[in-house]
Image (cartoon, one colour):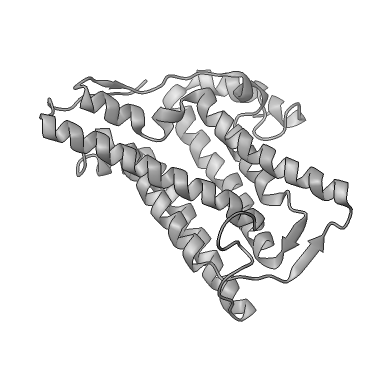
Length: 257
């Protein structure tokens, strides 16, 4: 468990801190909901297969760079060494909110600058199969959201940190817990993302690129995350990893971590 303390905040500072955290969360929430519609080409002004196009090679480079920027920001700003350096510049109470805000702004850039690659890779013509894939797509996002609440949604997105600062209380980070979803797989949030990436009745070239690169980043990112968790929680995490698989419940890899 991590405890952060700061000097007592003035009333104005308390308002600014809580306002900053709420703003970062609100922007994230809007971008997150838009992304669900964006990938499915449903309910948003511009889906992944809409908007400006470019020659295939250019579109691949631009879109890969946008996804790469998102991946680098997520990975670098989440590392303990970066947090130690970063909190010398900004107050620890807004570190997580700043991470959320940076990720959201890059996601907005991705949604804005994405180059459509609408050529069809596959199309499911059977109505009930297409409906099943839409249900699976929705389930993926539901798993993502549900998994955040299973641990601590408001801590994950920085609201608990800014609330503690606004009340002039020390922030105690969450300890090592294993709620239900996390007893099935070690990374249910990432499993939800992977399901949402691939559950597509209509798979375009652009969405396939998104799914491939998004999945590759997920697989790499959890390695870094688990390295940090092992350093933080030691033998407790090793025992956990020995009995719970990363992504697929009940797989033989659970025994090897």
